[in-house]
Amino acid sequence: MRDDAWDGYGYGHGGRPSDIPLPARPEPGAGSEPPGARRPDAPPSLLSRVAESLFWMGRYVERADDTARLLDAFVHRMVEDPWTDEPAACRSLLGVLGLSDAPPGPTAPFGPPLDTQATIRRIAFDEDSPSSITGALLLARENARGVREVVSSEIWECLNVTRHGLAASRRSAEQLGPAAFLTHVRERAALFSGLADATLSRDEGWRFLVLGRSLERADMTARLLSVFLTGDGPMPDRTTLLRAAGAEESFLRTYGGAAGTDRAVEFLLLDRLFPRSVLHALSTAEECLLALGPAAAERTGVADEARRPVGRLRTRLEYADVSAFARELPTLLGDLGAACAQATDAVARRFFPDAPLARWEGR
View 1 (tube, rainbow, N blue to C red):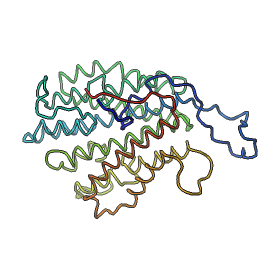
View 2 (spheres, one colour; view 1 turned 120 degrees about the vertical axis):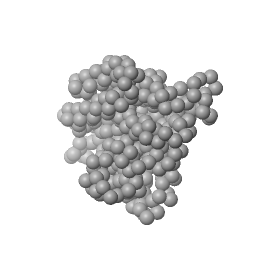
View 3 (cartoon, one colour; view 1 turned 135 degrees about the vertical axis):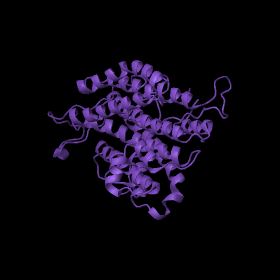
């Protein structure tokens, strides 16, 4: 059982915290008003339970999307390289995804051998685990159900239809293989993201959703690189790595077909223009935190505990020495996961003070 709270994976809105309004940012020209005064035309503050649900809704959909991409690339890798140590590769994948209670040997104490099919069932279809694709989508829908008053009807219908189609998608995957199921998940996640960007006002609610999505994207990209670059088995080819991140076409347009795996890693971590890169995700998260943070100017340091680890790591990536990048990669990936966990913990303490502590069990 995981005892560390907010390690990038949690149940999110697991209860009903008190309806505490978030601190409102002063409107332009409001500096002359007495403390505590509120303009008649100012929008109502977002309730903490609503902000929490939007934050975790963004995270869960992004988690399902990224996990589907990672699992698809993993399956292709296992099929293309039959000499890979299958139990070791499966354990590596489960461990990187946070399922640290994976059996230490090739066989579980009271279960079947740990193979690709068992790993697929656990990562794709476990309804009780928030780290599985199905579990994440179910929780995203539950969070949306609790805040239907602030999300568009299109977003709710997208998540609701996705949830009710999971059983049929699983039956199809069991008969025809996981490829169609994983493609379906990616398409539904893309639909959700498009609807969120097209139908939500750029207010506090949208920023919380994008903040959750961005932190999850940075964390999952680090997990993806950990699976393929620091796990068991040979170094993957460039195409496998880029397809797992949905980056193949963008990479080829940027660098052409001659660049190798090292350049692909740099692209996924450091590219400023690709929206799924770690640097872009951290920059977006920092912008959201700045918009949600205190309005008072900070003359020294950064008071926001959530912005601090995100900004520190974003700066480290932005000014990284590319020539020494390969040597620092394992440490950097670990620091990235820790920074996302610290930022999530700080966001929870500040904006969701009455939320239950997020814990989960790997199954």
